[in-house]
Length: 383
Image 1: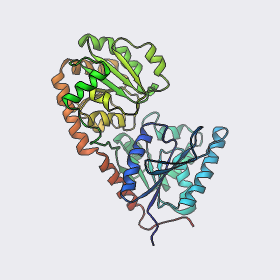
Image 2: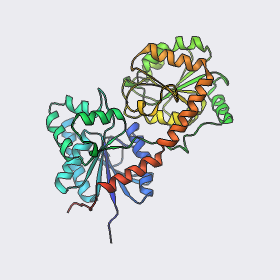
Image 3: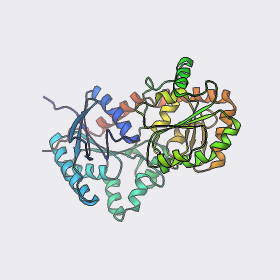
């Protein structure tokens, strides 16, 4: 009797630690299970979390990281190899080119288990840039160039970086993040009115929203500095900053009038349903899950020209792209949309159509399933 087709996912953190990579994995893993794959998540064990847990039907194995960083990394590597020997996966899927891929390649050398590695982000703070800043960069880059079976890229930016690093096209698989288009759908007029009433927002005034981590790389300080000028064009406009992070308290304390801080939420949909415009002023991104969710809900996006935003936003058609950290361009784009609700509505409808056609979560899951089968013509298992 054949053993199940097992996929071991290795990621730095997982539920309840939440970021873009964690959210995307949490979305695809149960759907891969539904396709008959046996998915296991290997991650770091942080204080207060159980060593073993089932999350939405997916086994999660949290492995120790004791002591100083270097010691913790070595202990995690050893524990992960023991767990992988026990699990006997057909494929190891590493999420990020740092520790997860290092661990996956160690297992590949021991048991020849195929490895696919997802590059989470590009740019100055991306995976490859971090590797190159490391004192052992050459020794860490060389195995990537020769031993990773497939690289999963979520943006053209990352694809260009891998090409420049000498990775041939046949080893680069373009599988962007996906969004559940049934769960994230445009609000009906009644839903929008109810969402605004619940949040105490004006019924017929522009509402802008950001969802995600309130961290420096999201560049929300720039947005807040522009907000008084944007509000001159629409005096009753509101800005929702939904999320939490290291800058949240500081920025909230100094935020201007018309800015609301709901904090960390379990479901961003009520805030997306209340809004007209999704704003993402980031300095760097991979492919923002929050951006995909906002566009799936029919919001007109205004985003920095970073990461996967250039792939999903067609300027003037379904949104606006502005140079990163360019306050004048960001202000002009936002003022144009709050001043022209007809343009905003047209771009929002086009956004929803693009996401539904090309970034639906089931498409992402199908592409991953196909890739796993492609790299395992025969089932290689640890002995």
